[in-house]
Structures are given as structure tokens and as C-alpha cells.
Length: 247
Image (spheres, rainbow, N blue to C red):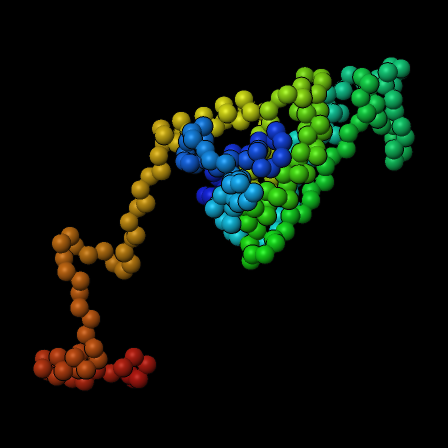
């Protein structure tokens, strides 16, 4: 799913409330460049950056079923990280699930459950706006921050520290990928360098229809039926018989 050009400008952190966590890049091609606050507060009034009313996706979806990585594969990742578990190990706890013994606790950790997709719908526009999406999703992500730290810390065998800065990569629209800020920064730098080294090619001119003409030739004029009849009479070729009426 392709997000809109406006949505590509989001710089979305998970460090606190929406008002202080989201910014808008001035240049989508420079993800580490200057950025503006998404929330604009002047005295007692709060307003939002103009991109807030832009569609989230290029296809102007009215609703999305949102998945969050790594919580959508958390249980599988946990099982893979505890392949060393053994029923004879007293620190491993198994239960009978659907007729099979299944690991439910290992190394002092309970087996997690995957986060199911959840729906985000439009509010007052015929399309899902950036603001619709952010206001629905950001509080959910903040509520899941401890789970995210735990899931992201599986490769290290322990949850990530509380002070780790997390970023939201929404480039795939309905599949949000939560990453550590340093990982996100490396990817954005690579993407920016790649775009600079390989700018998009100019579009090719449209291919003309019909048979090719000799170089520098003028277009062949098209005669009307009356003009063709007069030319046949002048050349003594006889009348023109319309197609389908000849013998």
C-alpha cells in the first residue's frame, strides 16, 4: 500500500503524547533535515500542521486494518529465542494445548500473544486523513510501549531499556514497523543517499500510434468522402463504392 507524499513527511516518535512526539519534515527526500512540529500551540489554542488534512494513502482508503511489527510476530519470535527449552528443565513450564505439550514459560518469561490487527476508520472526510490515523494509532502505540520494548529486545534476551527512543515507520501504510531510532536513522540515511545517487529518470515520450513515418515528414492529410469522390471523378476512376455495398 502506497502512502501519500504528505504522509512520507512524518517524523513519528514514541516518546510521549502526540503533541510533542510527531514532526513534519520540510523535505521528504531529506529525512534527517529540518522539521516542523505537527502540533502548533499558540497561547490557549491548538492547531495542527496543514498536512493533517491530507489523505494518508494514495488510494484514499476509508479504513485500514493496522498491523504492528514486531508485535504481530511476537509469539513466534519468542518461541524461536527459546528453542533451548526442555521439558526436563524445571525452569520451563509446559501446558497441554490442543493435545500437545506447549511451552508457556521459559527463563522466567511468560509466552506472549501476538497483537491482532485493529481497524482505523475515517472521521469527517471521504478518505482516511493523516490526522484520523495519527490520533487513533498513537495512543494505542504508547499503551503498548512496554510490550514493544520487550518484543524488540528478544534478540538480546531482555527488554530494551526504557530510555530507548522508538520511531514509527509508516511507509507501508497499514503495516507499522516500530524501530529503534538509531536503526531508523541508518535506514533513512541509506535511502537518502540512494535517492541522490539514483534520481528518477525522466519519463519517456509517448509512442505515436500508427505506422512509422519517414524522418521530417509531414502528417498525411485525411480526405473526406466527398473529396475522395471528386478526385476519383477527376481521374476517371468511377464512383467509390462504400465498404460492404460492393458485389
